[in-house]
Length: 137
Image (tube, rainbow, N blue to C red; front, side):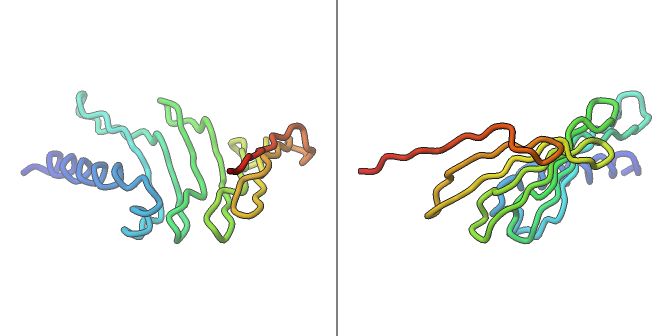
């Protein structure tokens, strides 16, 4: 088997394994720290690689960072996530390409239920909020 065919086989196997390791349960089970989706140009024989997506996980299997790239490999979106002790998402921080905060979204919980979604601008000023209201039987 040539090096090229072996490389493609290894990459295909990795993509298959990591592609199915999306749930936090599977990420934790396999002890995955990061996942990267890479497009490899094989038709022209260049094997040019372009990163499409990068994700980092905590020990509980939660996504703590995600970067999405365009077809040229330029960063489109960068988000960091934070979780509480119950593994509920409590914060999303959107960053520019230099790591400067663009927007922050904070979720509040009470008695295990999501109560608010608070939107902050780049200067940490509250600009909008959503309130979750529940009725019970």
